[in-house]
Length: 56
Length: 329
Image 1: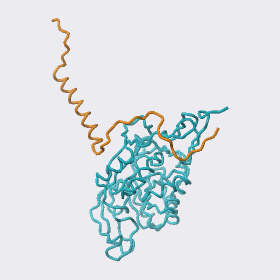
Image 2: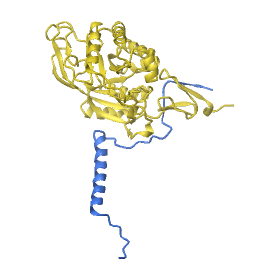
Image 3: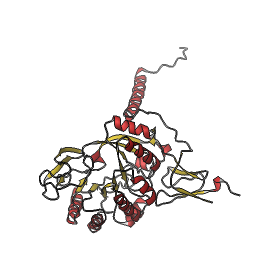
Image 4: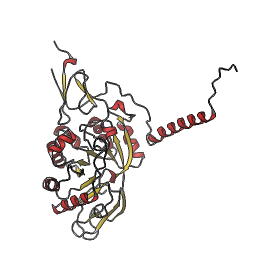
């Protein structure tokens, strides 16, 4: 047989689809009460803080 | 010649007063020296957002039976080996899945969820001070109340500035023992006691929680001293919650606190003159209801975090008319 087509077995495909759906549902559920559901950027620099002093 | 990156920054928010070189982070993991300025990495970046019952904070004498919008970011300035929220408190912000939630979004969501108040909780609002401050100011302008749930490990100046926006606080007094604070929590007792006094002076409504850990802070003589300190410095009406420890984080080898230990501590607190003493994280019919200290009438009946009945009349006992310390409406 000369075929390069990759076909997922039906059971594996179903398991993968179910896993993806569960992931999407759980993510949506966790943040469901919140309207600004946007992944935030944790990179520097952040915001200027209060209560500090500088020393040389 | 020096430039900004040579400058050391000293954070003056909490008693640790971390001295930071350029790009170095404080002990809390969320504040750092950015070119000679202190910056926070968690402003508007919530790691937890929930609507909780007020009783879960625990606040038993503040708007009982109402939902409270609860907010946290990553990080903490203490490192308690028994931390019940260590998955978020002992992590850096980049280790967690955060949500962009500016103060206006918090206030809008709290209102639309039917909450009359916002709790700054789960980790410690001390380390997300600026976020708490701005949200609390906006919340108050929109008619919402603000509740801190904190270990109270904060310097006096920032605390006084924040207190003007805070209606109530539950302070976790972890033990009445400086050695416990140093060895188990990486902190110290004196600043916590001072923070409690400051909150009292600033008219923040206070409740106190003491988590009892078997073999570490369950000595009844020390608990008795703690109760007398609370009575003498904060007043006999201050609600006190003894809370059950569950083995978590770095204290997995210990057993949960026996119910009998919690009830013994609660009876001791009453013998020492405290009027409102509760037991938490465990069912205790004797110590989960609010009764009138004068006539003993059952005023607020609870089951866990649920309020089953509230028989207060304008903040007073419906039977004898004694005023009950709290914020009831």
